Image (cartoon, rainbow, N blue to C red; front, side, top):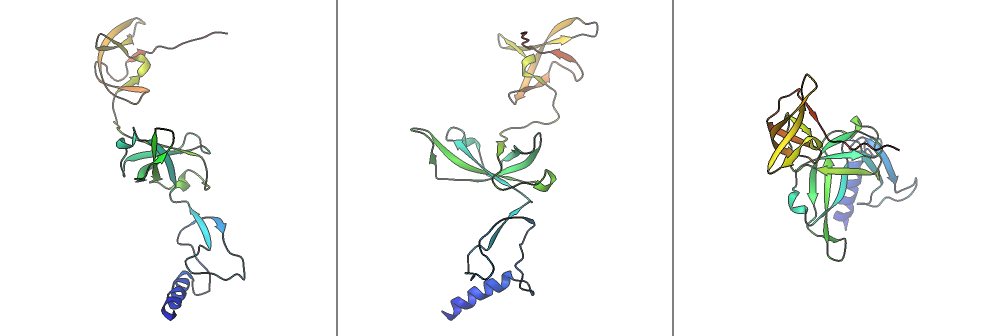
Length: 205
């Protein structure tokens, strides 16, 4: 009993500075306080909770069909609803092995995505804010690309309509690479600076 009480006292004393003030190991915002002045403090109980501003974590549900494409350490990004047009670099921090049943036949798994850059660069983030997490399965950089609406695919051949300097147009055969669903990589057939025409639907009222 003595050893147990001594260990509890040592833990409490290690959390106190010389002036009896409890110090947080990180900067942040006080999210909750569990005790009031004069109350007895029990060992291993949370006195207060600090929301740090160095990083944030977002939990997302991934279906069993997609979970095999997710791995710990995988590149990702986080966007906060409160801060439009701003994203944080992130990575997959953990994947739960135990599934959570989301329907009569489908399963989902909880994936935690954690930011890898300082949250304070974006702004003040409060616990419980809405956020979206995107996990990157494949990425290419410094490549020539056009809108997917500019690509015409016929008989196994991809082509684009190029606008010439005299205002005329000509059809060019191209080879395509990676696509993110919006833009398509062009591996050959076009040069940087050329103008291509993309299909667009115009409606009048």
